[in-house]
Image 1 (cartoon, rainbow, N blue to C red):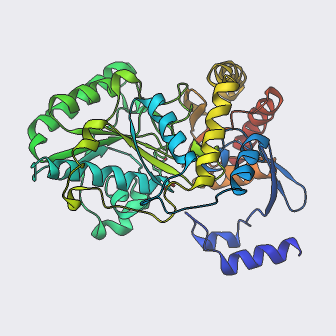
Image 2: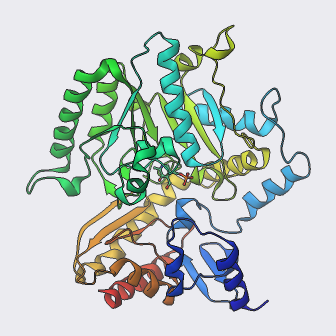
Length: 433
Ligand SMILES: Cc1ncc(COP(=O)(O)O)c(C=O)c1O
């Protein structure tokens, strides 16, 4: 099959995500035939360094032998079984491991991030109903938040380009000021700004506690907002405020969980949420899997002789054994290879290398864990697409969000590959300005 033939068939038959399909008249699809570590390789053999971990899912590279082996082994025994009324070893083992890592002992599974958001919102609402608090039905989130694209998740998302077209379908939620430090006043420190935002949160929550079910938040980094990083004091204050006024705290760690912010999860033991949503990196980027972890107290509110007090939510592929074994292999790599410590060394290397970018018209150079970002002051109104195209030409997969260029590479990226990423990013930006 020729490359052009494949591209034509894809455009005819596949409706690609998050895409105005007509734009493919100007920007051809990239036909990938295989992956190898941090690289994607197209049908002509051209290599692209995957600096966005294929939408933030890939942690340990493409074609990773250990994750692949775990899936193959699982494939020889059980590919899938209904999880209602049945169970299996990979799902039990994974749930126990996640409980020991987070302190949240009950795991409810789905397949995608947005489904995890839906589950957490429904569970929170249903908890309050079971507790006789029938008025606690509303949700709050942050300005510029992103929690997924299904209707419930979009209802707590605050990105106009994804939300506005569907506004009549969505349930209203309120947005609290974002603590993203780019929004601080001149001369105001990220910490002081975060505290100021937390004060506004407290005022709102104190007034509306009787009708609020939950506050949903992306801990430490609002990724889809253009990697908006904020001070951890905000998380701490959010936890205190939610506890004080009896509002659930839902931590959407779908993008930032599994080491992205430097620690295994962005929420630590001292600011443990009532619900934690995980997906993306959970299987190392191999198979769709998401999970909502919650506490025993919440679980117990559903445990009853009355069926309808139970959580009657399901997805067909819930707890899929292949996906759970990929997740177990991913967690095993974290442990055996001391990943979090190695990532610190890698991050220091990137931080040093990226200083060359300060030659360019950029601001708000920022970094947290294994995420780097900066805002480009470009004259070109089509900077984002131009930079994307320029980077592809250079053999680099970047997906700028508006004028924000970011890196979220797989953790196995080598020093040579970091050099390549920095050098090609520099060129792509320069040519796209
Ligand atoms: C914080 C956050 N929540 C939810 C989602 C939705 O996940 P999915 O695309 O798997 O539905 C994303 C995806 O980028 C995300 O970044």
